Image 1: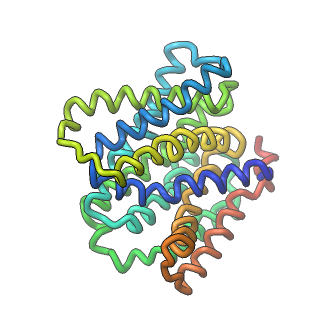
Image 2 (image 1 turned 90 degrees about the vertical axis):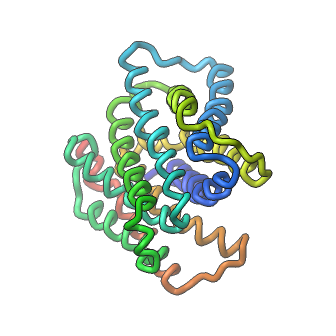
Length: 295
């Protein structure tokens, strides 16, 4: 992986690694559908003016917009709402470990759809090692009842959606000459339309305008959605869906580091060992050997 993409991967992990905390705080004032609508609207509001100011080429044709709406549905609307629903009843660490199944879903879908680079032993080992490292960090066996709950299943279904979306976006949208910034803005615009429709039916609950909830939604929208999706599209275009989805394994590393640095939380031997496994897994997934020859 090129150095620029390593930096993008690290920044994306930082943005998404804190998202479960922001979701948990935002749910104090908003319902899942309200939260997702505001998150998408803010992300679109940040990216669209920049894309228009730079006069980037806009998506053309019914087929392209159709793909954008499908991507918006499976990458934004459905999984965002499912994670919001899930985190109403499960802890953020449980949501995090279930989210870490995304590369497994991506790998399986990409293999079946024959859309990603050649399957290599290093990549398979990397996916398994990275997931084991995530499990070791979060120790989900301490929350087994939450994982098997309706909220846990909602988070797992959201992760499956992410896995499908990586492959879909890689096949039909990324790397086709459309700037990542315009692709991201267009997809978030489509997702905002979908959530606006859902809001009329499922988002009529009273809103509590708490400062922590409002700030969390703002961070989720502007940074965790707007800026993050530009990085995500670029990684998919450059590295392929499976390698790009490996960012999911870095999220618990970010969560543990932020907890230790900002909240003075305890770092256990399991967390350190899990972090080492995660980094080793991501390294193996990103190895370009044999991948280049398959292009």
